[in-house]
Length: 223
Image (cartoon, rainbow, N blue to C red; front, side, top):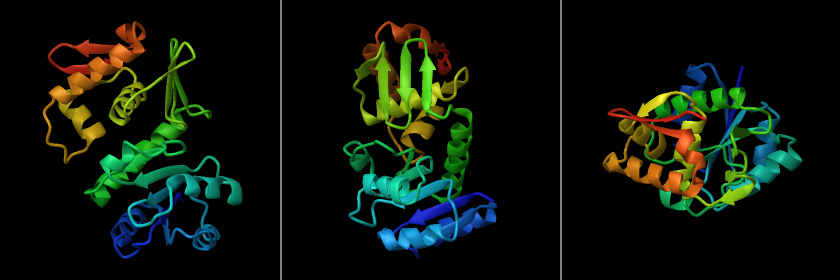
């Protein structure tokens, strides 16, 4: 049975998430973000995913990642961070596999969890997506072309990653808004077009073949 560790100062608020996980067939454990509490919880289960509530504590996600990797020997565990969109644009993304931005529901979290576990299973052990001379390092949130690092905003990276990890599938602009920006985003679909244009500009000629526009529908990663 798959284990999910929830690290938070707000255990009562996370109870609904924990209950939803158990009903879905997972084993869930809630602990506080201090080292002793995390270590004690890990004595009860070996998690595949750690959900870290960064809004409930001053601890940084990188501290939790180091604790999991060095003290708990969990280098490959998937780390999901609960944060705000503003904070997500500023924090160090290294070692974070996915985000949850409130408000969200247990149903949304379970859906994102299944997708995250599916991606982890279908991406190579180095957590790297390659398409021609484009390399997306999912573990370190880095994009490079011909070994040259490409600077991207958080949403540009998330959009490129989403398309690249669903190679060959066509997504409408509305679907991309839901998956990348979230169901509570009220901006228009033009936002997607603007971000695609920026991504293409930053990737240069590489993107001409990788990100296809499907007329009257949306976009597809064809690399």
